[in-house]
Image (cartoon, rainbow, N blue to C red; front, side, top):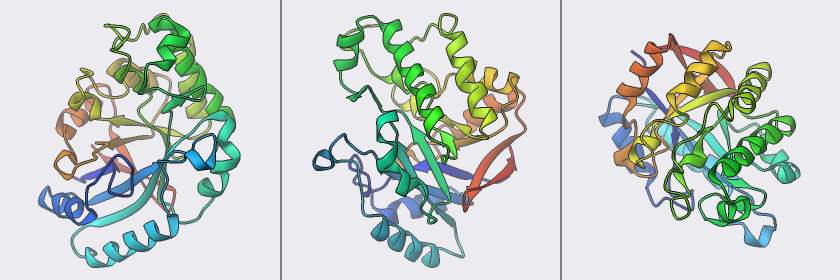
Length: 271
């Protein structure tokens, strides 16, 4: 059975200190067939405020060196996670169109110029449901603009934050937001953009994967087939965490395959 982790961060991400050597050694220890490094590229409104960026040339050169070093042990793929916002497409366009990537994750880490990891968004939109709605609206807006991503990352990422304002921030009213979530899923399917099952929700105490099983089930019902599996690890010890449970969940929902990408081209692997 093929084993791979499609969402891993290293020292090239501002929120990770993990050495690439440690990551690849852990992947070999776990018996993975492949691993995709997807470090953060999150542009700010102003270049002088950029924090989550890295030198692409250095990144690719470094990863290519490791690809050769581990060629008999592990397939190493070069990816990136871009924290997209509608008003920043022009800044992202050169990154998205670069020919160095195997895989691109598009993620929503910010809404209306606000990082969702802080409480500003909850203070602006007041209620939990208003915050969740605006988050999903932003995803839909991004999908009208961004066409070059492989999958959309952790679709209900907003559940992870807001505890400083609302005690029930981890619970999304799926019935209330059903029409909006369906629009997102249908648009993803129509644009041949996949989603990921991101296992970090378990580690961060959300109580489920990102997105939750109900959204994963609905994606399947609507005809969605492109799904990757990623740990979102920022430490080597978290690589492929909870993958067994994730794969069993996908099987129970009727999925037969998960996906990987090489040179931006989709590959299906049996679960």
